[in-house]
Length: 210
Image (cartoon, rainbow, N blue to C red):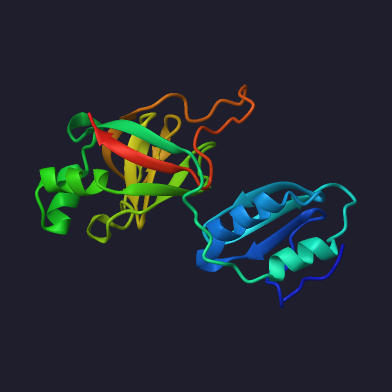
């Protein structure tokens, strides 16, 4: 195993795993690495402020990879992924936290829905559950800290807000985000598909009120 490299912001965290600190440039760096298709990389896993590079067993960190990690990032367009238009049933039993978020923002429920659906979101990374998309683009007025008490069960397809992110729950399970609606969406994660996750980093999501 090689040594960490502070100049390029990466360090080994396992025999084959490199953690690359990316800060706010995660998606741009991820798309740059994907586009270069470097042969020693087996997988790339972006997160909130870093990317985990999984190398093929026995593969060294090549000069090309070192250069890719050290290279300055151009103002690369992150709008290169697929656009998914997803219908959402806002409020009611599907979105019990919507009225509270509207009050917190000092706007009506209708205005809250309009603002939420008026922007295109970008999938920055996946996590929490398989296929759970962390979506950037939430209007500042709708950002809200996670709930003090998580729910034991959140229904599949629930659209939720947590901090500066919006997300969609791919499966039933516990969750601490604010529920604002439910998406009419095909399966977000299916391990039997060639690409198991429907939404991938770099993809865009546009919510359409049902």
